[in-house]
Image (cartoon, rainbow, N blue to C red):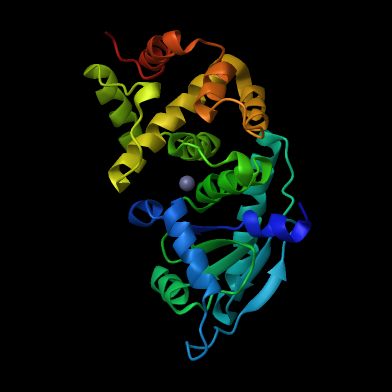
Length: 276
Ligand SMILES: [Zn+2]
């Protein structure tokens, strides 16, 4: 595959807005696809592009407007720190240089998306700076997606389950929210832990939220049995089309499909201190 086609198939646009829940649920492949279309379909007669300025950090292009100049160094440092975390954990260096696009407000970000005035690039991370919050951990989550898509070629990603994509990103972020922990405890308390073989196809933001929590727990379980090296091995195994991603995950955990649900439940009961 030539470099130019590789760049095309690796295109993914992610959207980071601290304090994010509503927007987070839109950071899905369908939304990303829409955003890419919006980025790509800029029509003559649309509002002119903002007066973008550009700089680089070690691993990112950065696009920003004049008034955000004082923020660039801080945000760039956070992005680089997040990069080092994910790169070290996954033992991988990105083959591409994503563009961080900074906006003063979420409203500006959304207007730029709607009007097609985001600078063209093969891969974007869009960041609104008006909400204080977990910017660096958000970077880690979104970068985990970028790394995953860099390691696993698109030809091997056709049946990539949502729980795995979002679960890996949340695992890399490495923070359990009260809300996420409460969902796991409720599953355990009601014997309602979803079976790995029965996870729903995503049809709603709520299901995406639950699959993300399930996936986070599943990657914690994998790490507890196989270490971070097991996570890395799973990603490498996803480069081929033999077996489904879910089967590869179960293999990486080192269990049979028959044993998985029971052992996963036992692990989570200990991890979240829920008694039978
Ligand atoms: Zn995500």
